[in-house]
Image (cartoon, rainbow, N blue to C red; front, side, top):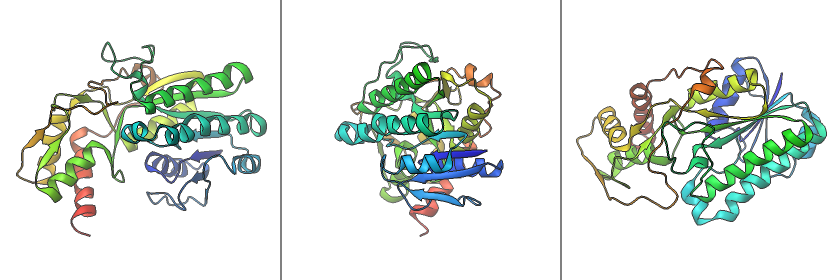
Length: 305
């Protein structure tokens, strides 16, 4: 089966491409870089494509049977600082992709990678897919707008789409966000000062589990414009995450918190994953083991090179 992975040069996209190759898909990757961030053995079809230019000839040539749309920016902070750029790589890019698929591969099964940022600060936890969208950052608003585009192309044109709202992704290869900050500051600065109070919670899921969950949606979901939470289903405080990472790093420091929550950052997250669990999804990487592996990888990146 021909699978198109946009953003295949990025963090999640490269893991998805790797898993699909293992499952004998004919994987075509497209991204901003010349090659994926994580080496993908067997990925023979990868090309650069900046923005929406080149989508038409690419899709007309490939005519994919399935598409995982993992392209786009993934930073709340950067979306606040530059909302125009975030919008261009979000709804604008998503519309261009959907429209070219409508024209050249209308039967393609399309999975859009959204975010828990769509929920903002949920009124009730664990938050289910039926909770109202209430984004608090440009990133969250743009993800929600892209979701609406997927539903538009399903309801108006009959295309097969689904949406995965990914919560807090982590894993080897990710050089940003809170776990990277914890490792970098602990190893390089010798002091661990983080935003917030430490009581804020996230629902962390290792990127290998994310790739598995995404493939389960592509292979088994009805693709009627529906939404799936993709997470572990467990809330973890940032304070506990820091303690776990410090232990894995083997450093003797105590986490500190400045008490300030950045604009656009939610306070508490925990997902109801019953819907994707019905497709057979079961997280396989325990947080302690995943953080331990990540900490050792981060040490290699920061100290031993």
